[in-house]
Image 1: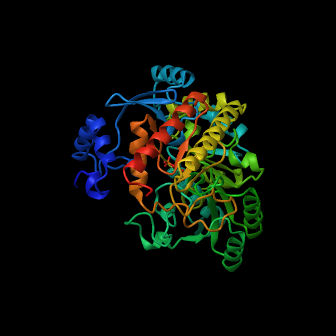
Image 2: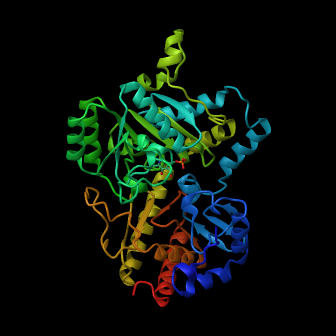
Image 3: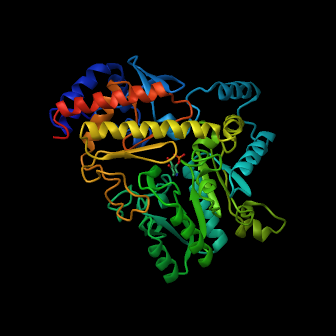
Length: 460
Ligand SMILES: Cc1ncc(COP(=O)(O)O)c(C=O)c1O
């Protein structure tokens, strides 16, 4: 595996060289990591040309790179750090728990307290089961739905992301008939039926035509962290359709849970699904996830007195670190603190201001694409074909996830980092602790970044 060189893939742009000169320690760490870590990085989304920055510490809205640069962070632990890095409340809870033990290999009161809090906040949470990640949560939810419905197939929407297990990787990125990964058996992919998003008629026709669908899973805030926006009327329609056809409706609120409101999207739109998958904020930024939902479905995890049920009827679920006390205390501290919705009001307000200011930058500098998003999410595109924000009821979603020229997105990330901001390509997650000053500095960073990119021959 070669170390990627921006210049070999992105033409002779100055940006790669400027970025490289500014980040020599990160470049050396990247080269070193590549000798031990397969593919250099530990999550596909952290892949970046010519190499990602390495971070040494973080606090509040800021993180500091190995080359000593301070960055305003919009990754926020992939959306899990709703209260920013190293929030004092969470630090205290974690410090105290470390002294008391990090893994008891046993049940403990904290897991019950954590589950009760989730039950109180999330409308669909009659019962809770903890996992260690969002991927595990969606995998378990699909298994539970199949066991409950006694049917094999899953209806999934094009462009919606539910983690990286085999069933989740069908239809994530266009072209949707090609799974996001090689190595997935055709038999697994054949269990997943795809429908275009925001098209109730397509789902209605599919469910009327076949009797083998166990579940419909959706990101209720819109596919790929809101990149493909969605509409409350569509969610209500899906609720009615799945009810009518005896299909389990699963809201994947791994991103939106505890972010759109203390009870997630379902609380905002007043649609209660049969099951919900959670991760990220639920564990206060530590590893953790959960499946919540109707007792009648989740109780399939319960042992009974009947050996036949235990061996053949029950749904099996294990996981060494599920509900470990450290994640539990972080989750409890986080959920307790944000339960009154005040943090959401702040985060949403800051994100709205940021979206508005950045839309102004796009306009003033005639940057292709647009800025949009809901709640505390920021989505952006650099595609000339997407000059205005996509409508929430858009059925023409195929262009929304396209990065026609990925180099522009990599170059923008480099230019933003050079100007003190770190944001993922296509979206950023705003926390409840981002400030007006952060917004002002971020807007300046985007302006400077776009000017740098334009000088370098991008957008011409
Ligand atoms: C909507 C959604 N579902 C599931 C997942 C997978 O979660 P994890 O990365 O914790 O496995 C993600 C991750 O970003 C997600 O955005």
